[in-house]
Image (cartoon, rainbow, N blue to C red; front, side, top):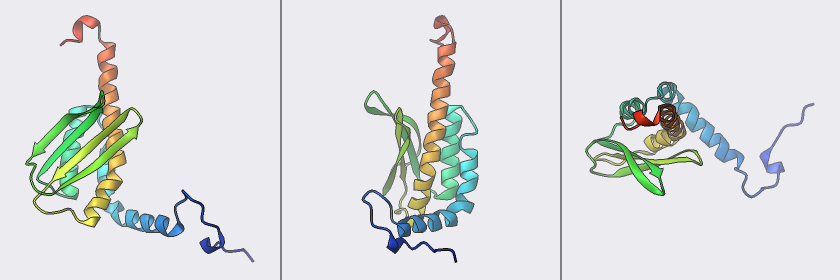
Length: 155
């Protein structure tokens, strides 16, 4: 007879997420997967910063819909705007974009009505993929400019 695992048998360890929290998250993520998969598949297919931002805008509009979007990244300790489109009015939703210690940013969405819990969950699931796609595109842009001779970098 194989012993069964019951989380009630294990002591609670601070900093460890409970089984219920993990199962709830897996259930939510599984339900969102058919909607999120096409977006996640497309993000990161381009190393062009502008193309990545436009794709993020278009695909997020398909998933949650909004009136305005702004994307900013941390540069020299301040948030620098990278992309903005639409109208910034109404309730806003700000999602942190963190891919690595050297990259962090904000995704800010606006629309006339508040975002639902499901929409918030979808955006939270998409944030790491969006952050990684943007971080890679920005790194590629930096790498490309460092390959050019000094005299051509100004152009």
